[in-house]
Length: 99
Image (cartoon, rainbow, N blue to C red; front, side, top):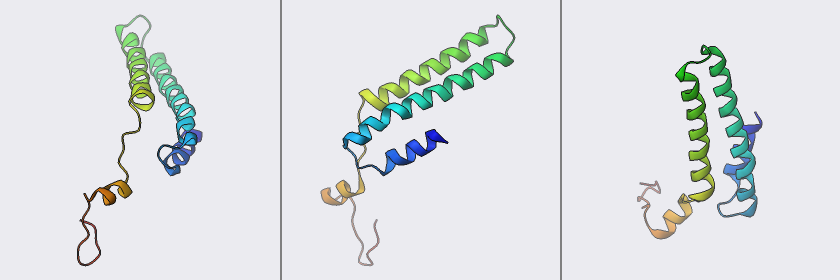
């Protein structure tokens, strides 16, 4: 629940704000924790000594690293609807509807 509440707060903050940047840390930590807890639970089902055990931990680790890269290093490259309106990519019809 804390994870989803944090994501909800993150989505409501304006792009480029400092608080939005700081909210990335707990979201990534909570997501990584959930991911690794899931890997641990799956590992307990697998018989000890099997190669699948390493595969499960590897998938959890790689997923955490990829999300870290896109969340912190890649940056916030999303385009808002306000930017699209300003740049003229969204046209309004004569009925006032967006196309």
